[in-house]
Image (cartoon, rainbow, N blue to C red; front, side, top):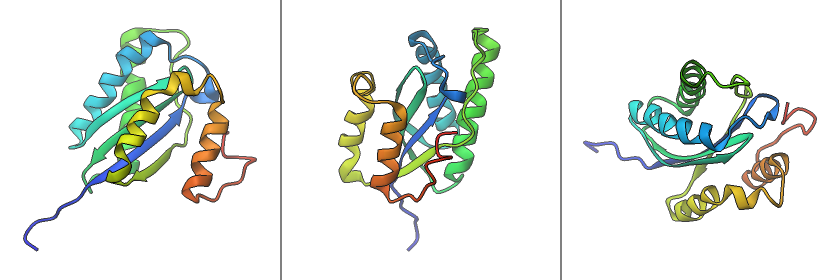
Length: 150
């Protein structure tokens, strides 16, 4: 083939360090567009970024390069550095070390968009730990429950 064609959709999830509830509505209003810009600067597009006080969900379409680890590192490092410098908020924003990145079939894109859009309502019924564990189980990811939410 003369061209490479990809559709790489990722549902990315990561939390604040120690799941501190520091992502206020005002913080999210500033951070989410900035995160979208980071993704765009790496050749991708953020289809939706949303979250609640202690974690973020992103549905994005990426190119094959750079890899997902590089993109997530850029999002987390760039967004927290920029936010802490510009907003001078307290407490300082830090992200938990790990993240989840789950591939999404184009046929499931609308379902995932709906899921991410409704995070506030969703988390009135269950915690981040419950949500994340279910995502891991549904995706067939092996994990040690003692460590997966450190």
